[in-house]
Image 1: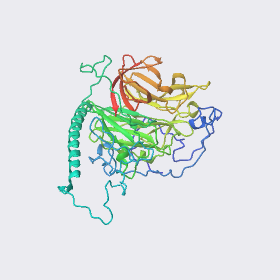
Image 2: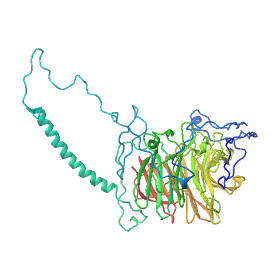
Image 3: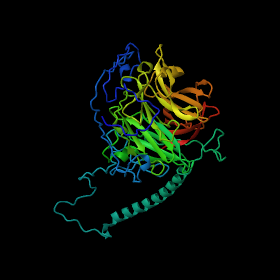
Image 4: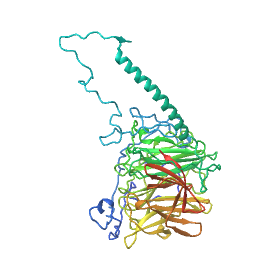
Length: 547
C-alpha cells in the first residue's frame, strides 16, 4: 500500500472504510437479493423479466490490480497545476489523411485507426489504386516493325502536348473559381456568431439569421455517441465552453469556444494520444462526463470515459487558459474504477469547504454490483457508496450538480433512477450533506412512471439565479424530453419543452452546462441552445457546434 502524503488534500467527501475497491480486508454481510431490479439490456433480449444483484464477496486485496494503461508521468508536469510547465502540446500523429474542414479553418484526421472495408472513409485515402500494368492505353507496334518517329513539342507527342495543355487550362479555371468560392465560404463560416435571445434578434439588436441545416450526407458523428459539456470563466470575465463527443470513427473530439473569439475550435483527443505510450481506447458509444475548474490562477477541464473493459479513463487540459490545445492523460492516481457495462457517468468540480483550496474532482458511476458510487480526486482509489443498489435501476442514467450550503457552494445533488414497485422508473435526486450517510432521507422524487433505463436515455441538470434555481431533465425514448423546475421554494413538473428557432430536432444525446446551456446530438449535428430562465420550459437556439 502506498503511503499517503504528509498533507493530503482536504475534501468534503468522506472516505469509505468498507469499500470493495479499497486495498484492505473487508467483511460484508450479504443483503437481501430478492429485490427486483431493472433488467440489463443484454438480458432483456433473452426474455428475462427481473434481475437480481449477486452478493459482493468479502475479499482481501494485497496489491491493487495492475493499471493496464500504466502510470503516465508527464515530464512537464511537476508539483500540481500551479507548477505546470509551458511545454508544447502533443504533435499531431503523422500518417493520417486530411479529415473534415471546420468553420474555423482547422482540420483533424478522421480517425486514429485505419479504415475497415465498411468504413465510410475513402478506401483509397492512403494512396491511389495501382494501375493495371496491361492497360496502358497505347497501341504496340507490330512485331518486327519499328514505329516511325513522331513529331514532338517539348519532348511530347503533339497530340499529348495539346491534351495536357487543355487539361491545364481547365484546371486553372476551376482552381480560380474554387478559391473564390472557398474564401467566401470561409468568411461566412468563420465569422463571429452572436448570442441569440427569444425575441428573434441577436444580442446586439440585429435580426437573427435562419438556422443553418447540415446538408452533408457524410456521417460525422458516431450513431450512439454520447455528449458532455462544461464551462468556466477566467479572471478577465471571458466565458469558455467545451463540448465532447465521438466522431464517426470512434475518436473523442473536443470542441472549444470562448466569448472573445466566438468560434469553435477542434481537438481530436484520440489522435493527440495516438503516438504516445498511453493511446486512448474508448468504447464505441462510451459514457462521457466532463467538468471544469475556474479557481484563479488555476483553470482546468477534464473529461472521463470508459475503455472496452468498462474501466474509467480520463483526459485533462491542465492549463486550459494558456495551453488549451494541450491534453494529457489523467491517470486517476492509478485507481481501477470499474463500471456497470453500459452504465453512465456524471462529473463535477467541488469547491473546498469555506477555504481557498483547489477543491476536488468528483465522478459518479454505477458499480458492477449495482450501487452508485462517487470517487473524488483526493483519494481516487477509495470510492464511496452514494445510492445503495437496492435503490437504483441497472444502467441508470446519472447527473450531478453543485448545491449551496448557506453561502458556500460545497454540496452536491446526484440524479439517478430507481425501479418502483409497479416496475416503472422513478427519476430522483439525492443530496450530499457532508456525508452520504442517511442519504435515503434526503431523496426528492422528480419524475414518476418513466421508462426503465435504455441506451438512449440520459439525464442532465443545470442551475441559475446564484445557484438557487434548478432544472432537471430526462431524454427518454423517441427523443422526448421532460423534467422538473425548482424555483427556490417548490418543485414543479414540466411535461414538455419547446426548442425555439432552430432546425428540426431528433435528439439522440443531451448535456447541460452548469450555466444553463443545452447541447444535443441531432441529425448528424451538435446543436446549442440557451435556457430561457424566465420560462424554463423554453430553450432558444444559439447555433451549431459541429460540424
